[in-house]
Length: 578
Ligand SMILES: Nc1ncnc2c1ncn2[C@@H]1O[C@H](COP(=O)(O)OP(=O)(O)OP(=O)(O)O)[C@@H](O)[C@H]1O
Image (tube, rainbow, N blue to C red; front, side):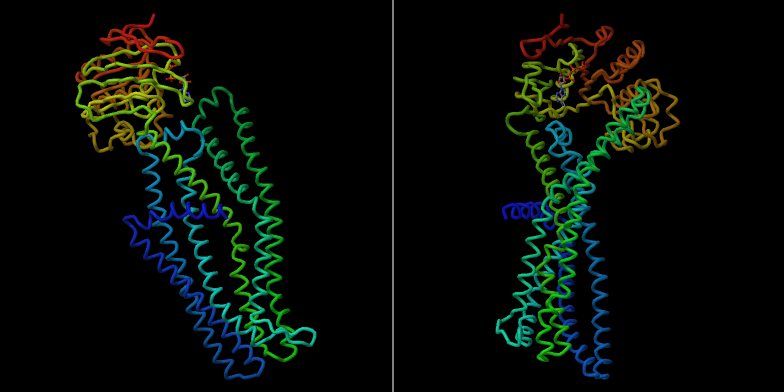
């Protein structure tokens, strides 16, 4: 029960913001329309139930006039039913896409906000495969929530309407057994209730493992898909290392998880279907058995019997809603749990960004330098990595940071960029400063070369001439004619060419602080020197902080800072490490 309550609370938390958003009037209007149509459909069911009494009585009495009139009534009811059903589906789908559009934008906004996506990865796998959450789970959540909600609403209203009818019919056809009448008020209603309770309890008992199995299935499928994509992305490395065998084996292992879990689902579903199919077949005949004695004792007519059977069917179906939607319900709960995990993980990542106990980045200061105060950078598990108290990166100065591999140079850059929360102390950044990080492997979105270089700015922020000039400067004039070509540039260009493009990007954006993390390490020394010279000439106002291992870099920097071991961590010292 607690479980159900917490699932419903989560559903409420995920669903309600849309109906309070800027699209609330469209959302509320469509929802109201869909609900109203559902109620109208139940009303038609009630009318059809009464119709069946009149129709079958007319047949039994060979009354042709009534028969013809009732055919007309049926056609009218059926036409209304069809029109309502068509529009209900149409409006329901319309609501789904508007709701999904809003929720997807909301999640994209939160996920891609201030490095939340990166911190979520650092936190472990509470929100594995965010792509699945944002694309598939949002869609399923909306579809299933509407489906289940409408089903439940239909059941409640059907129940209320038909219980009254069935109660009346029970009085008209008293329970007649062994030649005697038993006076049990509403005995058909009780019959339907007992039947439904029995069905629901057994369904829950047989089907409950399906919730967990469904959750796992989605996870294994997403894992398998993600690793296929990863193999595709790294196809060159795999081919060069002749890693196809290893790749096949680990993909196969992941796929085996999918298969094994699927066998579990199959065997459970088989049992559940055997039960639910028997249950619904028995439900067809059960009311006839209950009223047959009264019918054969000539206490009711054929119409009364048919109406009773159909009313019993409606009450029983409404009461057994759980049995019919069990599979959907199981999937839905798995989807709700995943979206809940995703939201929690985003919230934790966001809290980390500005919470206590993590590194604080203050970019509202009025100073002229980036100041590290009491900074202690740690690993996610809390182990100390770098102590950097009192370091000041003064405006216009060019600093080279050196130190052993794994000493935490890149992580220090991440902390300054504000994406590494683990640790304590603060980093003050001048309010008007713009920071740009150039890593060893720059990232280029798939698209035109023009857009890839302008990234993260908009394509139109730079003219084709500006981009061509920058390409000439970094030694890639041959790319000038390919600006409009769509490609996966990270795959197409050599690492050295990508690094030159990274420098072109920096020239165009002209940040006030430029951090180069081995950003030219794949180039030969003369080319690297030429690029550093270019940066000094073209960006004289920019403060440059580089990480690099080559001694030739010294010539382009005024200051050297070394990382030296200090107990269980590294500390910063002016000058090169010994
Ligand atoms: N996401 C992470 N989770 C756990 N440990 C990490 C993570 N990222 C980095 N580390 C660890 O932090 C340490 C410092 O890594 P970092 O990349 O900052 O070193 P570096 O000095 O830049 O090394 P290199 O010169 O080889 O590039 C390494 O031991 C690394 O394994």
